[in-house]
Amino acid sequence: MLLINCPYCGERPELEFVHGGQAHIARPGSPAECSDQQWADYLYRRDNIKGVHAERWRHTHGCGRFFNALRDTTSDQFLATYKIGEQPPVPAQAQPRKATA
Amino acid sequence: MRDLSAARQGPYVAASPLVRPLSPMTRLLLRGGADARAAALAALGLPFTDTACRAVCASGRAGLWLGPDERLLLAPQSQLMELSERLSAALAGRAHSLVDVTHRQCALEVSGPQAGVLLNCGCPLDLDPSAFPVGMCTRTVLAKAEIVLWRTGEHSFHLEVWRSFAAYVSKVLAQAARELTA
Ligand SMILES: [Zn+2]
Image (cartoon, rainbow over all chains, first blue to last red; front, top):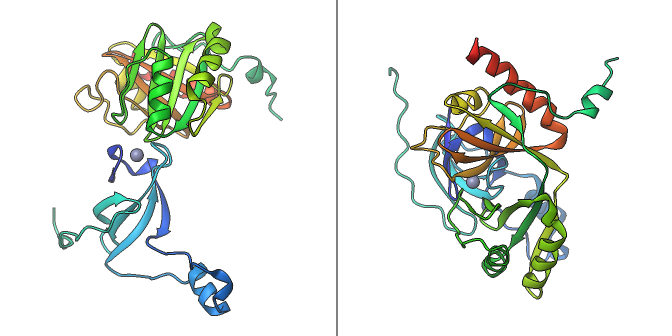
């Protein structure tokens, strides 16, 4: 089973976690001054990255905390996890998927 | 349609020698900053710790780490009023939330040399004592239910199960236990 490293609890099985969408999306400071397009972009538009993606995850069936993760969307490999409010660590290069075990 | 009244009458299925229901107890869920957590544990006569996934216990009471700001406080059933008052006094003026969840969940004990193997029928954690030592506690899953799992001894686990899931959880465990003891 895929193990995810919760910044609070350590390595735990994927079953305990819930994906929370793209990370580091800041809510506009003054929504009233946003155009409809800017507000719609904030609400709905997300990156669709092939490669390393910064995402929010929640350890729902564990400590309950949200945290951030860098995940390679092509291999489903987690490169790093870090607490909310922290800067994303510079990830080690994504390991190329091996053709054979 | 299936008659559910029988299930309602008894949340516990008389399970197996490995699983038994524990008697009712007092349960309080505390959330708050470091000062509130320290004050609450002190009021209960428990040593303070902020170590993740660890329980502290003394004289029949226990404080279980559930999250960085979240503790499940367990005590004998008769102490609910006394402890609520003592905690309210100790926590006055500190930002916190203290919720009586006594009747939300019930407790099962899984014990015996096969206890870890039995739990692994539905729990994906590594329950080897080197990875999940005595005193470790955490919220996790057992089959389709969420539980709190606390290792109270090398061969014994305390499970906190939400009341409406108790019948399901004990049946899952009973079925797995039949396989182990067959
Ligand atoms: Zn966690």
